[in-house]
Image (cartoon, rainbow, N blue to C red; front, side, top):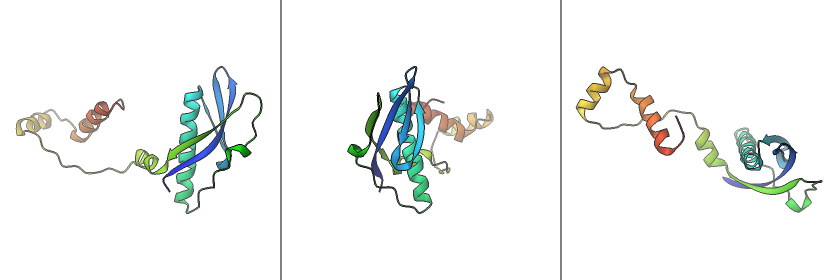
Length: 132
């Protein structure tokens, strides 16, 4: 099961911040604003879900959102995540790639002591908008 949806409760915590509670995993997180709180809810659901999978445990069945009680100012919402996409994003293993470049460029880069792997990673991150 890759895509899952769980209910979450967002509680205003002052100065625009929010506390986040995920009942089905009985865990909390927080966000600097509502958008950040939603992002953090996605992250904690993915983290807790993948940890359970890694331990061989089943994911909890999502609670019906109508059964969740809220109090003054709290917001209940559903948060959808893709556990497989989260795993790919967090994967830290190294993948070997073969590449081609002009001989003269290879020579100049080697003479300059350039680390090809680091340079390619930096260039890919910049091209994809991940920042370096």
